Length: 108
Image (tube, one colour):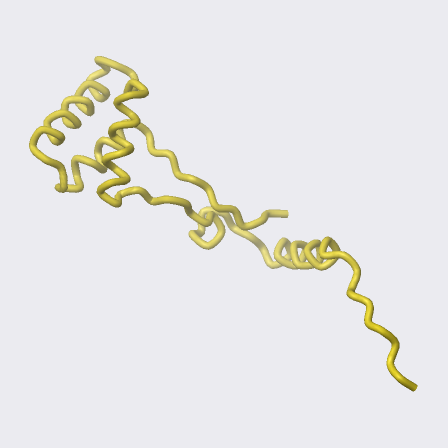
């Protein structure tokens, strides 16, 4: 049974840098720095960004509102859910909610 889940999307170092460079919102110094980092990654000079570089790039990425945030995998179409799975989920939720509330007996 598959449930709807929100998942935080983590970008690879190179994809993060490419999105920053393509945004056209960077200062000249930032553009030069991020381009140098991307060149170093693609040329094999280094394999990944240092934690400080990554934190700085992610901070700029979020500051420019490029952060995708969370994504609902089912509604975005990344995970397919069949009608049978939806029915199973509905039955499960009905059972897990506990017994129905009791009402006082009616007047006679």
